[in-house]
Length: 291
Image (spheres, rainbow, N blue to C red):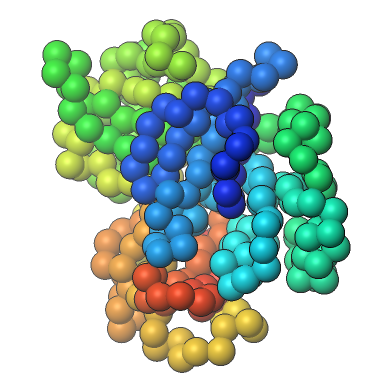
């Protein structure tokens, strides 16, 4: 089974598998008990909130490693709660007792708790990846490879994909062909739900594929839907600078989006963010793209 996991917090001394890549996110791959784990760890957080948001929403399950209680923990709790992620808390027993009051009233109140790495993996083995209808491949990287052409890396969020499939790509709004598929550096004829894939595409250039592009079924969000201010946010909502949906981070100013945002059915929430580089809670509000 393919399992996509976000790991938040210190990774020192923990075995998350083989490091497979790095952008503002560090990517790891681990084979455990027949399951393939693709692990996303935000590298530039807390300085930049983008890597936290992308890692959490690219994944289907979150491990939050808590070693101290500070503003970063509060922001991570808010993000995981609003994006409605299942997960577990990795923390020593005395720290977990201090954290529990901050989880009340959030989705994290129902998360599991692991006191060490051994318990963490035992719990992860019992977690099953979600099954979703439709067809969506979320793209988080695109680049050119000599003698191959345009290559993208992403996650099959719903459905399955096969070599020679012809699919729409958003926001480009055109048809592309899947020339080849790789998983774990091995060529495949097809890839199923929740697989971490590398795809060679025909009919498009890398600079036409921003992070957050979707292969398959989508449409574009071109204006801001109705939204709700976060109760914990005490600032001025005029400070909103970005909208986050799927794994797209789009500029926002004076009620206008800087670019069209591909809509995903597999994660309907969007977040509104202020000054992405400041310290302190940066989530201003949230909403549902289907409203």
